[in-house]
Length: 331
Image 1 (cartoon, rainbow, N blue to C red):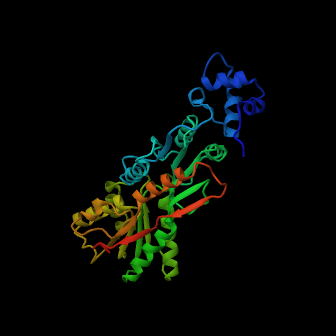
Image 2: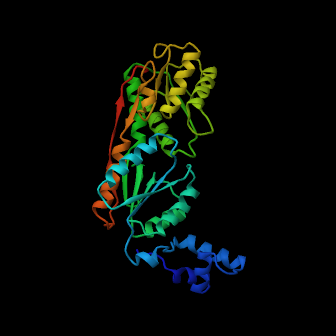
Image 3: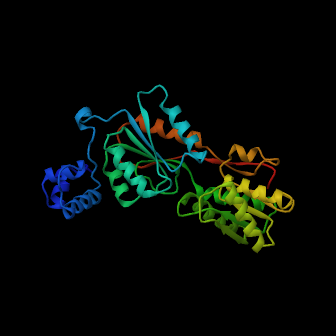
């Protein structure tokens, strides 16, 4: 599929190419209705202006666009370390953008990055706005979607199945003799991968003839503070629980802190299970039982794969970097 052109936008918006150019560059006086038609045409077509045309002609630039949902969550800096390691010794440099888990922000970043004709764009997850997906599909650049392989990628997906991770959490706890299992989590709207793990957990329990005894989620992002408060809320409503699966290690560490303050014996009275294998979870008085994801390998594998062949072959590729149980002392 060829990328949409300035002429295509002009034709759809029923204006001249010069008018489209002026809207894009925000130059001159443009009627609001005309500007609206041009911007709607740009979004509908997935058109990306080439801001690097004057200096780079038709060649791509030595830029790898990297779009992450957060840099405050240690998970994503570890992915970024892997990307940097994969770029070592190459002429390419990463251009970093942060979305704060906002798909509209991701759309803006994708448009901005593509305008500089990068060699590749790396995003987190397979969730995009329709306009962002069109831009990525219509572009000629390699596209890497990281962390999640439960969906068909645009080009390349590198990561793990979060649904299978949830199933493994259930299998581990049931194998240890726990039958009254509950869930504590954070906002699924911002974190679709956490929701996939929850669905896998429910499926895993069903395979064992069990159901989730209780669940409680906070509306905000994950944090140790949220984990502590949300576990306290769950236990105030559900007394007969012998294990809790948390949406991630941040939440689980907070849950552990609640157990300390409430004098709840872990795991004798209540088992705790996380996800991510973060260092802070392993530094607890009783190391956290969790699932370890290979975040560094995800970043490194993705960038090496994308740079090995600069051209798409039209066949989406999925690379599973796997995960494993990190057996602590909390479950």
